[in-house]
Length: 229
Image 1 (cartoon, rainbow, N blue to C red):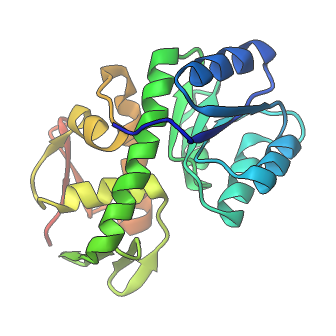
Image 2 (image 1 turned 90 degrees about the horizontal axis):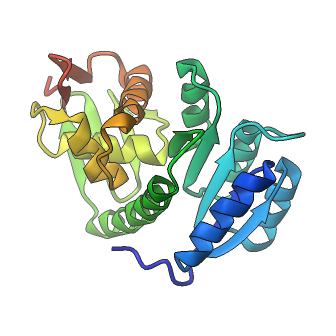
């Protein structure tokens, strides 16, 4: 399990009640927490001290969460857990498209938020381990370079987010095998809340858009498999 010691979390939330509650809970977990209430403040704090994980509200005064996430990822990639009061699929996909790794809809469980922060940190550790192994995985027209964290489809590079890449690698371990949504949640996100399976669906939609609709297949509505050919 990832140790929270020395791990820094930047919480960006304009609702003072939510910001205080999240900050207190993460501090109690042993994280070094900084809380800011607007987009400009978030970018300033990130530029000064960085962060290991960012918990970012989608709706902020001034610069919204999407723009903040986009600018952070352009400056220095960081795992982002986005908080949103918006339930529309298009809004969620936009958030994932600008570099958010995960999202939670308000109201949310503090226990689940802590679990997702831990999961994001574990994912960063796994990515570092894969980078050392220097492995190339080929499945049909898809080539995955785990060391460089790059994906190519018929020779053309596809720009994936951190979570999309990790999800693709998991499916590529056993092409053709069906992975249930709950199993993918446990393996990639580090938890298996049945209510959170929409997270998996959203990332699969993003993968299909970037890699082609036939690369990841839905099997009888149960789960997903990477197509061999």
